[in-house]
Length: 447
Image (tube, rainbow, N blue to C red):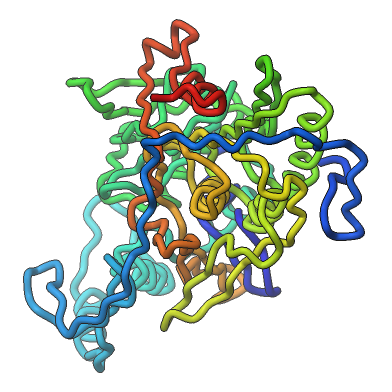
């Protein structure tokens, strides 16, 4: 989760550590802020090489039009607030038809195989249908059972398989399996489409329902039917649920290159990242790679804090665009200990989402970093959890994230400056062409 604000409502930015998660530091590093005095030297720790073939990011335009085409092919009045994001003009709703259907069901419906449904359950179903009509898989109603599940997830008291899922192209999709998780060990890959969960087809399923089915009692098995790109037949994978321990950060030195691997953006992530930067500054290495491949995101404030170590005070990191285009701009806190002398490489892929995309997009578009890898997942919206009754809640999208150059993250993700694919065969052989390319760039040998 990116952030939690305003009791009793809870604001959540996708993809954080809960909402759709299934698995779900430090030192004082130098800064221009007095409270962030740095106790290690950064003299000579920089590399300003940029690849000659790095693609420049373009700013998306904001265009207004008078009509849009709806899902049935009809033209309707609308306002295009930002590329690929539309909002139809509001018009009065006819609730007479709703009550007519309600009365017909109550008067004439006879259950066949299922038990009778109470009037309150019908209301919950109607509210769920209203939320689902928006076509946003991250806006949904939480009746009592699902609300309890969500609260368990927030508290961390659950068994899972160690992967995060999202909705992409209308299908439940694996953003990334957690390193060392039961899902990864069972062979689940980022980008896999989950077609069935224990035999239940997911084509009409919401994210929260898929989450509910995959999670469960520790030690019990869940069976997934996976659709994988370039594989003709569905793949059956059985995974035993475990209590998931989420790693946050790892570091390693490769000659004169220091690599910080981030696996998430939890509440402790800012301190852990500062600790990793201190380790870098005292390691003798003078080149830095930040690896956010397979990183599903987390707290927004942690991403902002991380970016602030590389940017002058006031530089835009990300903007939150709410209804009508109004929203908050998040700017660098100005730690900027490297004073623009350190050009880094950030490794990204289709499993980099949310806060990972915010960090990567900010440093790329502010000229601090070169992105290497493949296109990111494209997840940048903000949800608010609003209590409806003591037993139910509504999780609703209230804003979207916009990068410094105007890119709407939810409209397709970030394109790397240098695209490098990686295959499962290469991974199995211990090869990492994306990391190798990053090192080439930092050494100025890329052609």
